[in-house]
Image 1 (cartoon, rainbow, N blue to C red):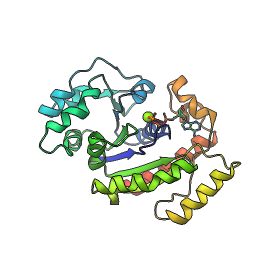
Image 2 (image 1 turned 180 degrees about the vertical axis):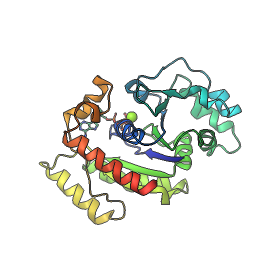
Image 3 (image 1 turned 90 degrees about the vertical axis):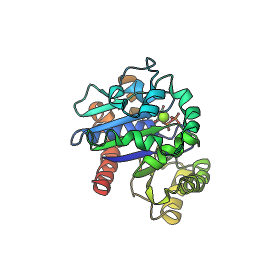
Image 4 (image 1 turned 45 degrees about the vertical axis):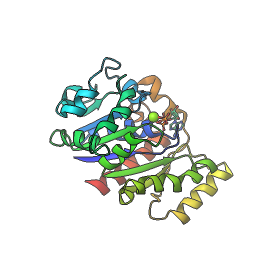
Length: 247
Ligand SMILES: Nc1ncnc2c1ncn2[C@@H]1O[C@H](COP(=O)(O)OP(=O)(O)OP(=O)(O)O)[C@@H](O)[C@H]1O
Ligand SMILES: [Mg+2]
């Protein structure tokens, strides 16, 4: 099982949207599971998985054998989700009690390695011990960014944080999202990505597109209701690039 995470410490850049849409595309060919590790539970909501009933992370983390019970099929074949529950709030704290406190999420993910080909983790926008766990558990980390000044300034900080988790080599690409090339700052940021982060530049960006916002309303990946939109096209291209790299 290959584990991908869309990570950026910055909020609202498209981590959940990418997780949901790219996971759906993977599920057309591979057994795929999404792991919602954000207390906001947006991924659990959009994938219509049961929420807020859970109080078992403590047991999952201590016994490490119960994660299957928390893994649900979505309404799409081959696409599963591990929902966020209220217990995620305490998780960050209880991790400190473990000896290998940075490797607990990876140990849990391993329990599912025979069941799935691909796992995509949706993390919270922060830096924390739980994020360190997620980064260490991941095989590939992609960084969605909005091509603007604040996001560009945070790229190096994100990279340093990932490197501090000894996972620098896992950073597989930067994905510009909500891009509007009519804006000079977006054009310049894309140029900066090409020049300063050439090894991570993927030569594809997701345009700003109102259809992307509709996924939270329609509770469907964009592929199912706006297949011909520019955003859906970009997501298919990103999916192909990720698939070619990891499988
Ligand atoms: N390409 C896009 N065009 C327009 N809107 C988008 C696009 N991608 C995402 N959005 C919207 O931007 C908002 C933030 O996206 P999303 O929730 O995926 O980000 P996030 O990084 O997971 O946020 P958080 O840090 O809060 O978890 C959402 O309202 C989403 O619908
Ligand atoms: Mg999110």
